[in-house]
Image 1 (cartoon, helix red, strand yellow):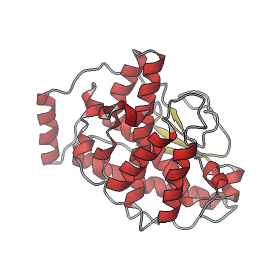
Image 2 (tube, one colour):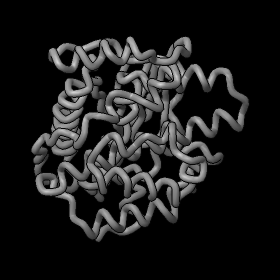
Image 3 (cartoon, one colour):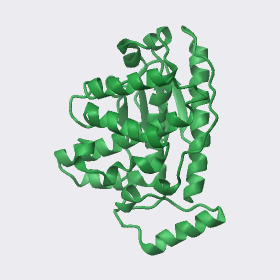
Image 4 (cartoon, helix red, strand yellow):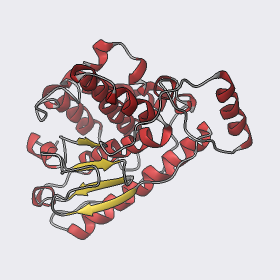
Length: 282
């Protein structure tokens, strides 16, 4: 069982960085558009992601069932090896690529893989300055996951925590590519401060749920120890909101709720935070 310090070391606190994303005009998905998507699915073709609020509340990804398994086996993560750490991050990214590429194909949506940039010191991304306290950032401007390797992480590597963090940042890429962020950023740009925080919580909690969906599919191959997973969820329930000066990632119980939903179902459709009651995204 990993101590609290281990969870912090591997990125218990994560950040959303997408301020450079261009806002899309909010237009609902019409019945005609839905029929085009269904036809594309049947033919094995892909279409552009939907736009408008329906892109978030009724996305085709929600109807794709269980996330495709990638049979992910990144191997051990020894202490003190930057090279081994980089191999682990690269392998997990490839696993995420396989699972989500297949899922987008089932949804009839076009998809391209994110870039991975592994860094050993904080950098400024095209989305802005590095977020304080973050060990991983996804920037939608260049569709890149920036993963930070610190000395603490090298001393106390925690495979489950590292994978969860990567799957969370990848979840933001899923939101970006599926059209969910088309609605998110348009709505955010036209909202007041409280509305922006509420939208941010729905985005972050969905990314955490997507992460947990992936974690369930690699339970036997990563592997995911059930005791460590339960401890991780409980840690987020008690401490997940403490790293943020404002409530833009959700309270601890909200984070634990969506982690449990994703892990329990292994289906992206369980992660529809955009249509969920406000009490579950508090």
